[in-house]
Image 1 (tube, rainbow, N blue to C red):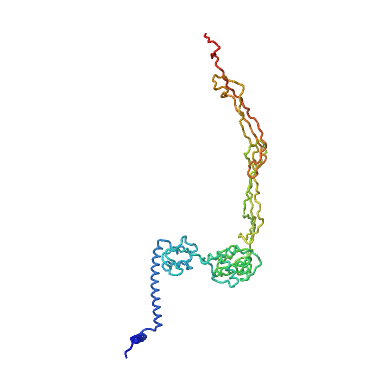
Image 2 (image 1 turned 180 degrees about the vertical axis):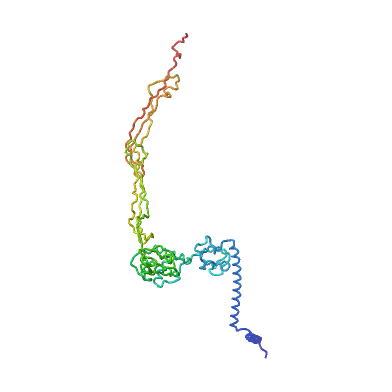
Length: 447
């Protein structure tokens, strides 16, 4: 029997598959092996491409300042030869407190998301937001601390910057109030929630904020419980006495209120000398005003001005009493004696303005009776030069109302006229025919 070609083909394929199954890995293993090989090859190709791009970027960076040159001191840098552009933008350790002045231009596509196409400008790295790095020991206190730290610090700040920010916030925001809790979490919650308390409250609040920010802080208490302060290591942070990052061992002889403020063990009570000093603070100047009055002298001429009373600026300031013990000022015992005490009395300036306005007018001269004969008929009736003169009339007005703010005249009285110099009449030419003229009726005579 002759077998059909299709049957022969199927038997041939079955034999090939059988032999292959005996000498090669299973089919599932084959797919796995192939997929891994492709991935390995692709990864190697991508790594080679990435290395080439980074080498190109490194060569370009030699001509321009790199992003890492602008990073903050004490923060780890990211080397351009080992990181992609996306790493420079997103890696937390490379964030700068001071952003670079110009955006970074990327000429090749980054290897990680988000991708940056050729020629795209990447904006400068943004400061990472605050994120909790520790706990105060209470969920309630942590929540209250987060609301403050979120606005106070960010993820790129150093421990020193965080401590300074927290210290200043507590110093400015928590007002003194007594009594207050001497239990850590209770006092910290009260300080964060109500913003008032005593030295215990301020110390506990600092400790809670610093611990939540990831800084190992604690507090200490004076031997008899009369004072408390925050500590980071052996360094004191005491907002009540403005002591910041001073070693506790260096404060053992600091006296306030008749006690060694920072001693935690028994010690004899120190001998103290106290004194009060009066100081003046917050001086303010009150500028004088200028007022205008009419000069009572009738002969005074407007707008001439005379300063009658010189102006003097007023000065006020607050009077305080500062307390000192053994020559050391005790800020917590400052006393406001008088608010806005007048040091110099303000004197307004008075300016006298002339009350009279004088104007001059001309009185035209008129023809007199004097005649001057002339044989020129064209001059008949004309004024003889250098004869006569115009008069002068004085018009005087008196100011009745004056603007006291600007010194301008508002109203005037009726004008008064006075002839200062009367007009002098002038002579007139009169035509007279010559005496030797011949007339028709008069015969010509000769001598």
